[in-house]
Image 1 (cartoon, rainbow, N blue to C red):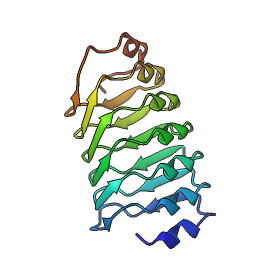
Image 2 (spheres, rainbow, N blue to C red):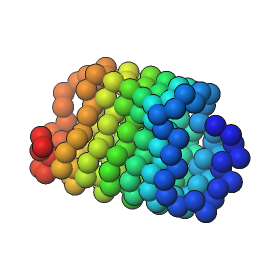
Image 3 (cartoon, one colour):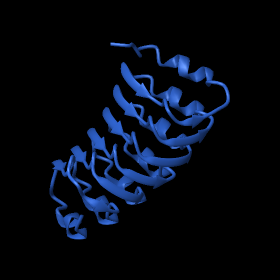
Image 4 (spheres, rainbow, N blue to C red):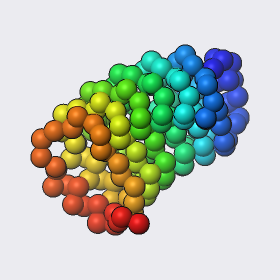
Length: 164
């Protein structure tokens, strides 16, 4: 992905490069797309390396942060907790992400659907702060990881969560 795409600073929706054969890492310059309010789609490629912390600067994004089905590594950056306008589709599934879930993800309290972190190598306990995602109505996937400990009672605050 060319770093020059970060110069598209006035782009406000639908940055779609998903379902291709793109490889290498995600350029840090994509964090400059700070006017984006919908749709950063980089899913189903062969992207590798860590998720750039600069993607946390996409703070106007209200839906569609799709980085799933790649080969992204390392920890989920705490800066992604700044995507606090996001209401749906926080998708980091099927990568090689490891380490603990950042407590900062509890700041994504506008999320109502599509919180997908399954099929990674995330470890340790589920943070109690995920109980702050109390707008979630469906699709909270944390399965197929290495999570341990007891489930936090705060997940009981997800009263709107259903199976449909």
